[in-house]
Image (tube, rainbow, N blue to C red; front, side, top):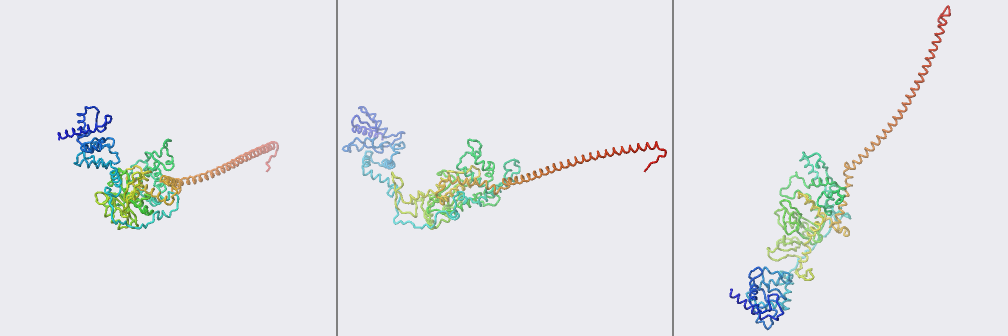
Length: 633
């Protein structure tokens, strides 16, 4: 082998000396010099290029073409030829070190030719004919045609036409759009459409369960501090719960890193609307005791969603009841992010949300309306059974179902046809057979949407790409304004996720009834928040009479009583003063009269005394002056 390699290097150096052109022409492929001493150096360079790559491994030339050799020298250049660095770099050693052709437009075709030439035992020099044929215009045109036919029907396309194929003509008999209470509702208020899903009946159930759980929690902790927030709990009402959820919706588009910052009084990041609507402590206490099912009732041990089962069933039934999807529907997975440890948490690396609770969702392809959903809880139900459970009442109306290769199979296609439902879905490679299955499209080829390099593809591929994104529309819209709060309780987050679906579905219904208003989900949410938080004041006046209005009424009544008592007191005091004055006057009069009477008595006594003195004086004189004195009566 070593002797053959040395002979090969010698012949190549002789050939290079024969093909060398003028002294001013230099080649970038092989290191050359114009002086006469290039024999040993040239041999070493050729050995290095012919038998070793950049990493020292022995490699081979894929092709070599001499641009300096003329057509008359073709026989002389059959074995070895000088590479042309200006036209191509196929002369470079093949192997892991090759990366210069990675960005070439015809790289796949050249890699195929390189692999074929590396396996071909034909001498290296004979590659010139293949190289020349690749430069021929006819060959280039055929190569371009082969590349374009990759997306069409041809030898290398992978698509095969079926002779005498006729699609199924299943008529579509449903009437798309709002139905039931949604069709009868004549309103331009977004809150009215949301309340079609989150009805007072559902909210009253949540209120009852929340108050029940709060009472159970308080009774279970009798040793709590007397001034703790738990002991200050008051039963929640439906208007107050609407206010709570309204503020929760508001956190979806007013972003703050923590819940407490929404009640901040700092002028830099204050949002006074929260504090005016509900206190922070009250909001946190409602979130703490928020509950959806009675823990004391006997539950099905196999139902892992029992904590949210009443709310889940109610919302899903409302979604199916209020809207009729269009003809094209799709099934895909939806994920609610959750990194806790429930037994039904899944890991999907191909999804944006990799850890969480997965749900199978059936959506309208045109609007993204969530018609039905089944959370995955690790049960043993088969995928075909899950698909037919999602279809529910849509079977037999001529719907066209789009799915990916995770759900589809040949047996399922036949079963769907028996249920008068068309199918367009892909198949996995390990199932064998075709790449795609359709029951309602022609076997024709159409151009793709790319203008520069249009590819031909089967007719069923284009509607599949357009109709398979219904669940993606739903996920995209609810991801813009998420109002899910962090919690260690998965049931709270999952019900909030259901409320997000209800918000999007309500927006779809609203746009169907009022196409010129609330064109974005954000505007729809803003108007709902205004309605539900504004009703808080009216609700408190109507229902919480004993709390606020009752206090005001009591204060008014007490004030009236106090005022009346004060007026009566004033009257009594005035009367007492008047009576006192009269009494004083009477007493003064009495005193005056007594004084006058005393004076009169004294005067009379003085007179009596004077009379007595006079009488006594007369008697004394008569007694001593008369001889015969006698008392006259």
